[in-house]
Amino acid sequence: MNSFDTHDVFNQAPPFADVNLLRCDPALREGLEREGASWALERLDVLGARLGRAEVLDLARLANSNGPRLVAFDRSGRRVDEVEFHPAWHELMAMMIGEGAHSAPWVDPRPGAQVARAGAYLLFGQVENGAQCPVTMTYAAVPALRHAPRIAERWLPKILSNEYDPRSLPVEHKRGALIGMGMTEKQGGTDVRANTTRAVEMLPGEARERLGAEGEGAWRIVGHKWFFSAPQSDAHLILAQTDEAGSAGGSPPGLSCFFVPRYLPDGSRNAIRVQRLKDKLGNRSNASSEVEFCDAIGWLVGPVGRGIPTILEMGSHTRLDCVVGSAGIMRAALCHALNHARGRAAFGRPLAQQPLMRNVLADLALESEAATAFALRLARCFDNPDDPMEAALGRILTPAGKYWLCKRGPAFGAEAMEVMGGNGYVEDGPLARLYREFPVNSIWEGSGNVMCLDVLRALGKAPEAARAALTAELAPAAHRDARFARYVEALGQEMLNTDEAGARCLAERLVIAVQGALLIQHAPSFVSEAFVASRIAQDVGGAFGRLPSNLDFEAILERALMV
Image (cartoon, rainbow, N blue to C red):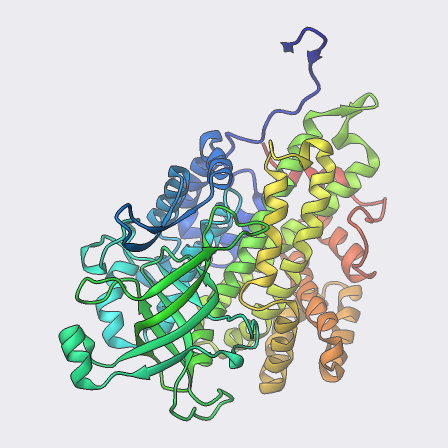
């Protein structure tokens, strides 16, 4: 007990630290086994122990308190456009890259590889979220780059390397490479069809003279990006207009995808000018920027005029990570809140034993477990892209899950913060940072409305396949619970009748249905009963802490954090 001149310090919960993040989370362990990644449990157990150490958890504080700094010029006045990071950032990045969070499913695409990666990503999400951004973009870039075999041959060995190399060098001299992206501009935002950045193909003679043999197929790019993610990356995928007419499929004429490296084949810097770093609400450890392309050089990825479909292949994997990352932040906020409630007393007994507090904590625990189960199930869809049913399910659940899980995040974070009271609101602890991290997953790679409209598009494009996939997913649970069966029946009617104005309600109900099906079939009865009673049998709306009083709160909370 610490003593001051005026008082003793007591009734303070110990920090949540030195805990194996996998072992304390039975829902995550069970989900990994269920979705086909039991072979990865031993490795993830080691990772969970490492990430739960106090000194590792503290890296997040250091990286966010000492954010990136733009160095536009060197001391001699030469333009360098470098970004400097705190050593804690580099430690976090080295851990993620060393674990293969950016590459594992592409390097070893065994059954369950995407689920195993999602498990690792969810664990990392409980530590620090800014570093997840460049890792996600590098991971998601691989399918898109396969549309450009010459680029893939040269770059993929470095992209798939598990060595983190932050040095600013041409890719040939690096041990590993990171990929970023830049889609939006000042005037367009979500509407990338309004992009004004232009690309003009270089004449063969000009390209050879300037770039040598590597200049084949090069384009000159002039314009800007309002959000250019992770400018320290070794290359970026961007969208730009060209003069050629677009092809069929909804792309505007000439909007194409380009690969733009920081360094050109001759070793010179590409003409990408970083104007400033964004001053963001959250995700403060990571650098986001505004840039101009002053006759920068890029290479086409995919067909001319098909830039949106090409880069959206990257976007689908980014959206998966928004789902998994949100589940990870929820889990972190829950752990800190529940640890506090167990270690602090009020009115003569621990907070975690107060009836109303138990209701709030149990409700948060249900939300977190459902998010984890959904994230791992969605990852299994990505493990089976050649299975028509899994592919159809993934096309629906990826945007629906990104909408609903990311939308639940800020309310979840605020409630967890409130459990800790003033201790949660200040920057000394992690809750304020976690709370600020939630909104970016909702905004990044398509905001809520965009996701819900994508759900409608997926349902409208192949309605029979979508209904068959959802029926197969939900029917086993519907046979076991009459309340859930009625919910599924009503959902089927909504899918037939929903217009754009009702798309949010439909997306929400789709996710809750899949979460309910997973918990009814696989979770302990005290978890599934609580979820059905609070999310299926009645409206999910309202604040957390509205569970029926006859539920087994004690069992839910014991399962939520087993330490």
